[in-house]
Image 1: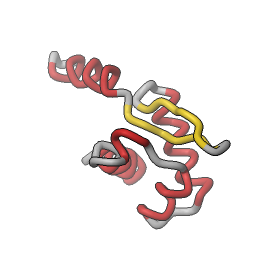
Image 2: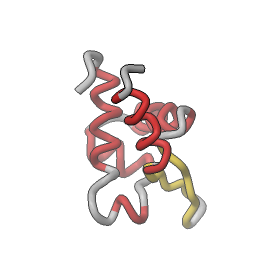
Image 3: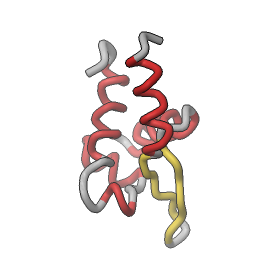
Length: 85
């Protein structure tokens, strides 16, 4: 995990979103808040940051955004770090 609490939380969110079911359908900010025991605005901040850097993408269902991992972008970032970026 990351050296910062928030970085560690974001890594945990990314890992959770990789699990079966969530990987295909994503999760709402409410689901993330409930899973990680945080306030909705805090969950939303994490999700928006991950979306802004391209690691998550959003899709809507029933008027609520669902957040999913962007596996292509995550692989690109992993390759950059593997090369010593």
